[in-house]
Amino acid sequence: MFPEANWTASNSVAGKRDRDQEREAQHWIETVVGEKFPAGYSYEDCLRDGILLCRLMNRLSPGIVPKINTSGGDYKMMDNINQ
Image (cartoon, rainbow, N blue to C red; front, side, top):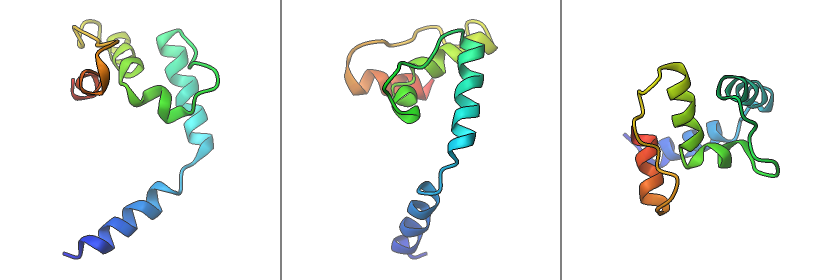
């Protein structure tokens, strides 16, 4: 109805991140995938390109993501998220 109001509301929600939940999710992902997040990178930066998420999905359901893009710029990495 009022896009400006929705934008403000979504921004305020995004600003209320729970670091404990992020740590718990990170630990679970690392345990399932069998590899640690790269040191020195934020939680969201480690997930942004979708590579780790694709590996996670393949661990949970082998072969569900047949091709994981590991290079090729933002467009290719976005394809990881869309799978």
